[in-house]
Image (cartoon, rainbow over all chains, first blue to last red; front, side, top):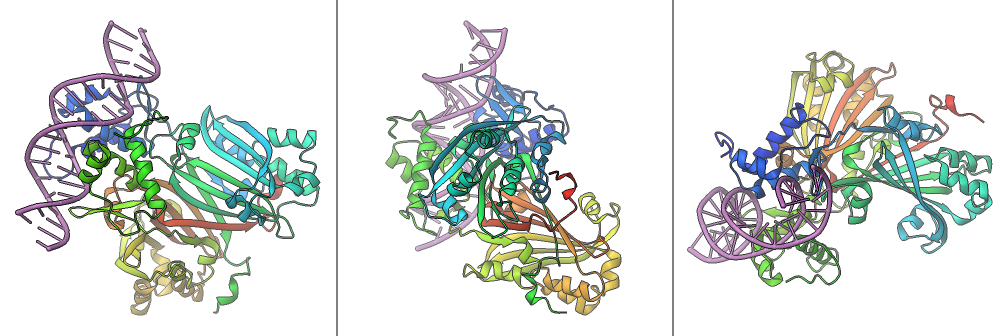
Length: 268
Length: 268
DNA sequence: AAGTGGTCTAGACCACTGT
DNA sequence: CAGTGGTCTAGACCACTTT
């Protein structure tokens, strides 16, 4: 029986706390398996279901991952920092995000094609739903762990104007790790991004996302809608990023005074 | 029995999908209770535990909330948009965030006191752990729903210099809904914020946070570490925000060219 | 074949809410 | 008080991985 000296806390929570502590103190090491559920159950004097429920808390928190038929393993989870301003000011930045932690980045380009814009994409691009766009679906990895899904959308005419559908442009689309090279390409052709905005929300991963990102059942993902606009304030690219929430740290910084649009109400 | 025509999907997932659909289509309306677990169990021909597991998925996703002894209710969850740049450029912005949705904001100031800086706060403020700081703990609401925990820290000497500990300063600390009035106060005294940075992470709510924010078991929160610096680049305030992830949408925007610090590596 | 986690059940007792 | 969800158990069968 688990001690219930003080806290009117359920057993599975106590067990989750215990396991969490053991992970944080290194009693269970990264990539090592936890004892099996029957083992823990018998050691702690509870039923296997109770242990399972405790572990499911750790899974949602991203502390462990389960390999079916094999065991439950401690995740090695250094958070990767994504500095938004830096990232889009430096063509190599996206590649460097993971490297800072000694991870080697890899991009898998799932698909580049012409499709009809969904409502979400259309709104962000300032076009009508159903209008043609070029989409590039990608999955990005660090050390073979999937870290991000990135779907980039470009208005059809901009992609065409810019020659992004010609052989070398298409090759660029497929090979670029971040967005830097594509932006540079657009810039040379008069559509260089001058302004960005991002909307960040957190939600539970869909089934497909969970599969693609190697996530557990109810794990949260960060969903970023990134919009790049050219000097005419016209959206030239929309990127949807879906990222395992436990893997990332987002960084933004800005100056209080440089931007004057919002300054009207500042008296003093 | 639940139909298993096509999908090799567990019953509790199918039931979760079913309930989610009913919520999204308005079959179950916001603030209405779901049928009770025994009721659903018997209707769907499964055990109560299975229904409970399905519902726990919806809870983590923030779609429903449970009132013990009473029932399970559909959450009414319009996301509140937090525009970072706007928010810190306009003294009233924080107050307006909720109002845009017809919600009435309220702040509850839990505590204002002098304490020793924790490591996290000390690092952000560029001081040593244990150094004295003024802390203001608050809980913010929209229509009586808690939306945010906000702990603001100021270096002791800056708070003292600025007179924030005098009666009117202290009153300000307790009454201000956002940070605007405090920033204006600091600005008048030579420590106006000139630059901000924010780190955003997502994690599972602690027990205390879950209680304070009326959250379910494994629900994710957004953790923002906000740092304000004066013209000398000295941190004048650090604010830690803990927000239920399902309640918010964060917005950031910036221009690609204005900031030159990162331009060095741009070739061509 | 043995071991792992995934899922499900029937039944039980509890704390809490609303009437 | 009856009804709600919270938790727990013992036992079962399954799919999958590892040996």
